[in-house]
Structure formats: structure tokens, C-alpha cells
Amino acid sequence: MNYFYHLATLMCLYLLLAQSMNMYLGFTGILALCHIAFYGIGAYASALLVMHGAPFELAFLAAGILPALLSILLGLTSIRLKADYLGIATLGFAQIVSSILQNWDSLTRGALGLAGIPKPEIFGVTFADKASFFYLTAGITAVLMFVMYRILKSPFGRVLETIRDDEVAAMSLGKNTVAYKLTAFGIGALVAGFAGSLFAHFITFIDPASFVINDLSLILVITVLGGLGTFRGPFLGVLAIMVFFEPLRFLPLPAEYLGPLRLWIYSLLFVLTLRFVPSGLGGLWKHRSRRGQQFTRY
Amino acid sequence: MENILTIRAAHKAFGGLKAIDGCSFEVRRGSITGLIGPNGAGKTTAFNLLTGLSTPDSGTVHFEGKDITRWPTYKRARLGLTRTFQMIRIFPELTVLDNLKVALKDNQQGLHQIFLNQKKLQARLTEEALELLDTVNLADKAHLFAGQLSYGQQKLLEILRAAAMDPRMILLDEPAAGINRTALKTITDLILHLQAQGKTILIIEHDMNFIMQLCEKVIVMDFGRVIAEGTPGDIQKNPKVLEAYLGRTAA
Image 1 (cartoon, rainbow over the protein chains, first blue to last red):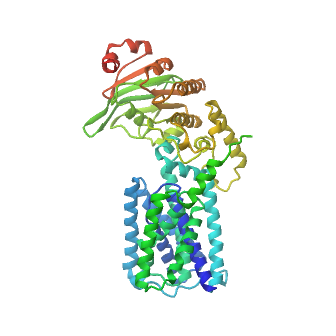
Image 2 (image 1 turned 90 degrees about the vertical axis):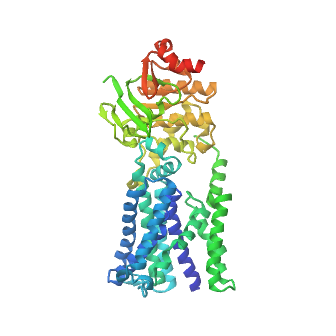
């Protein structure tokens, strides 16, 4: 039973990561490849704060706000870049963050990582076992998903989509596209940071190796396979990955083969999705339902 | 204020190519003005300078009495200056209806407004957008993705979207290019309708009949500057224009 709570908690975290990436990548068209860095910053910020005596509530908030602020700084310097250049710049940012986590020994303890991260305690209640931690994560995920839903389905979200479709046209209609892009990017980083905090206190051990490009690939596969620019996409992506690929763990293969095999399959899946169903699982459905919709005015 | 838009002594070079070379002209408020010239004369570059998609190396742009030379595009649009594009720029993955609704002035698009109850407002905006679509007989296409429309319909939608902003002035970059006779009539009517609402229109177009029929004044550009301006009748007789433009196409 614990295994299922464990899995369900991870699914919530990946759902948060995929939807927050979808916010700027799928809906706004910002090709930024540093989501894993926001996740890592959130995890480290939260773990370090709690280990130095801060209450979990405060650490959790800081874990979101710190990457959000960094994303705005990064965005101010780079968000005007054209798609592929932005991708490279943000990949560089992810690498720098990873390097800092690896080498700032006095703060992060470098490659040793942070062990013994306490379980969260909120208003005197400790979420120590797998079940209660799952309920905490599910609750927070539900709230964050609801807020993201409101954002993406609001007129604000519609403007994000116009920027993705044609930024020059959006500007010509009076939209301050840079401000909208920074906001979407900031919200993405905020939610990724929250997910990072939950991850740190869930696993209770983090090290720089948990936040490298390899792990970005899983988030990216979930987002793309599920369907960029659809709210249901990340749900479908997480389900598909967990249902079909978690069992790989039980293959009778030694760990040194299993890890690379999973990465190999994710990459293949990523390429196949982009080649054959670029709009992802969620996209298939969207186009079919909209096309069939009869127009009634009154 | 007689003139709504003025561009003075503008220069813009791309490397060694002087795309705009001392261009000056003004557009009278409420008029339909044509901007013509041979390919490469700098007409679209002039549009880009006017709307802020690029900034001039020297010279000024004034709109509604304000010096907007270095303003970003979105601020100019908010002041009431918008445009359409030679290569259509609609939002293909949004519905036709949403293409218009995002442009409507009263829409509440701030992040802080996401928790407002917008049902009434959105219903009103939908009605407004549908009325706009009705004027060009596209209302039955409202729920299609804009990318599913035909070329001519997309072109109409783009003009309509600019109009939905309720701007004071619209720059149209080749609205009649590649359009069949029926759609051309719809576009002509739409432009006249917008003028009747008091909006100022500046049109780049190669279709001479279209220009001569709509415009009260025509500006002719070549080599990045204005070589002639006047009524359509004057322009047709102007030897400089015949040499630079009509002469070349006739030959």
C-alpha cells in the first residue's frame, strides 16, 4: 500500500511540474529548458530553511518565490531571444544552477547532498508516513492546479495563447507581450519551486544529481506526450508514463541497464510524439471535439 | 488637429541598404490614404517604423500630436495605432471568435482578474464579436479555428480583428492581394464602413483600381522616400510616377 502512496505522490509532483512547464512552453510558446533548475532551487531552498530551523510553511513559500524571482531576472535578460536561442540560454542557466548546487559545499554540502530533511510540520501536524504525505501533496496539488486552470482559461490565458500563435500580432493589438511572458514564466517557476519543496521533504534526501538534464527529459516527455497547450495534457501524460513505464522498474534487469533503458525509451517516445502526434494525446481530443461542435448563436 | 500621423525625415538602413532614406509624409485625420510604389520601395519598412516593429536611425514619428518614435508597439496600439500584415498574422489555434475577443477593448486580461466572475462581461464580448463577424458574413464560422478559414476569410478576419480594438487609425498592408472579386467587395465595404466610424486608414496596395477607387490621397514611394503625392487623378498623370511605377509595370 505504501508503494501506491509513494507512486501517487510522485504523480502529483510530476503533474505540477508538467503543468507549470506547460504554462510557459505549451500555452505561451516560451522554449525554456530550465524547469529542472527551478525544481532544484525550490527543493534546496526548502530543505535548507527547515534544516536551519525555519517553519515548513515559510520554507514552502520561499521555495516557490525564490525560483520565481530568479526566473524573472533570467527572463529580463533573455526572454526577448528567439525560440532556439532562448532554449540554449536557459539550458545554460540550468547547468549553472546544477554547478552551484554541486560546488557550493559550505551551503549545499556539494555532491554529498542533504540528508535527513525533516518531514513537514504544519500547524503542529506532522506528515511523516506515506499516506498522510500523499494527502498533503494531493491537497496542495489540487489547489495549485485549480489556480493554474483559472489562469489558463481566463482572458489572461487567452492572451498567452495569442503570444504563442503570433507575438508580433499580439503586440500590434496592444498586448505588452514581454510582461505577459515574464508573468507566465514566473508562475511556471513558482509552481516548480513548490513541487521541489514537496519533493525534498518527501524523499528526505536530495543531491545535485536529482536535478540534472536527465530529469528534465521526463518532465518534457510528459508535457509533450500529454499535449502542449492543453490543460488536460499533463494529466494524460503523467498517467501514460506512470501506467506504462513504471512497471519497467520490475524488469529483471540490473540497475545499470534499467536507468539508461528508461531514458532511452523516454527519448524515443519524445521523438515519436513530435513526429506523429505533435499535439499530443490531449491535442487529438481537442481538435476532434472542437471540429464537431455545432455553432448555435441563440 | 488636421493630421493624425506624421513621419519626418526618417532614415533606416539595413547594413548598406538604405530601406528608408529621408521619408516624410503625413496622413489627414479621417481619410483613406494610399501608399504605393514599386517592390522594394520601402513601404512595409515605413509601416514597421510607424508601428514600432523597428525604430528609425534618424527622423521622427508623431501620432495624435505625440512623439512616438521610440515607443514600443503595444503602447502605440493602445494609443490607437494598429495594423495588419502582408503575410497574414491571425492566431491560427484560437477560434475565430477568440481572435476577435482578445482584441476587444473592454476585455479584462490582467492576472489579478482571473478570479473575477466574468460571465456577463464575456457574454457581452461574445455578442460584440459576433456582430462584427456578421458585418462580413463570417458569423457561422465563429467556432472554427482561425487556421481553418480560407485565405480570403483569414485576411478579412485580420482586418476585423484590428477594427475590434476600436483604434483611431489602421494601417493595412496589401489587404487586396490574392483576393477574389467577391471578397474584394467585402473588404472595400469594410474599409468604407471603418472610415464612416471616423477611423483613419492608410493602405499599401498594388491593385491600382482598388487604390484609385478608395483613396482620397495617394503617396508614392521609391528608393525609400516619397516621390509624389496627390489625388488619384494627379498621380495617374504624374510623369515621375509613370516612370518609377506604372511605367515599369506597363513595360
